[in-house]
Length: 210
Image 1: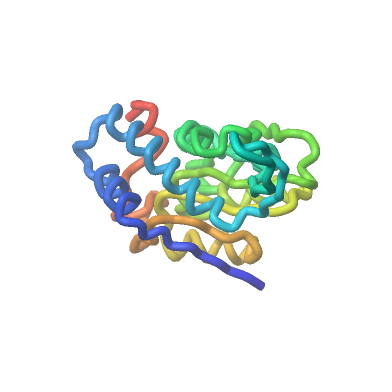
Image 2 (image 1 turned 45 degrees about the vertical axis):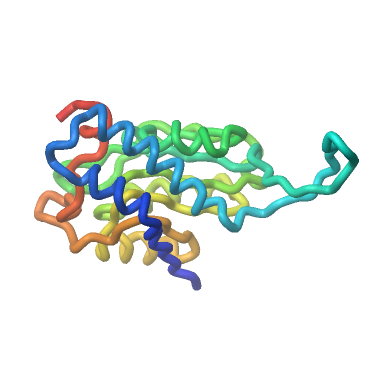
């Protein structure tokens, strides 16, 4: 069984992530950086997407050329922080459909509780990219992918800004077949279940609700 973790170490990705980690980065700058970073991550995520050949007319002649089927890609955002990823991804994959998974973390148990789930139809022929800035305890990610698998998509991949060994273990113990794409695997979790050194609460920093 696969337990793939793809570390995205492109210099631009690492540079922007460093700026996002800084405590003094403003809400406006943080939001812009998430947008830019998600667009860069989209390039890596789609590197091995299946392609098809179509006939087109250039100004000079007819030719066969390759395209990815963007309409078959679903961006599944784990609310609310995942929505910070959406715009940048959609800039690169404008044909993608968008689904939403509403989960909140019970502060007492740190377990994920679902309150909303909406995906496009015909998931059996779609490739899903799950978006969540942080893969921390892994509980929300596991719950989201549990729910997604009930729709029988063609494939699932998970993308986050930062994760840690505990989160990856929890996630891959439950879903060893789902690859994780991330620029950073941080040291671990603190007593509140936050990634350290991390970048704080990504949702609060994107939406200015600190």
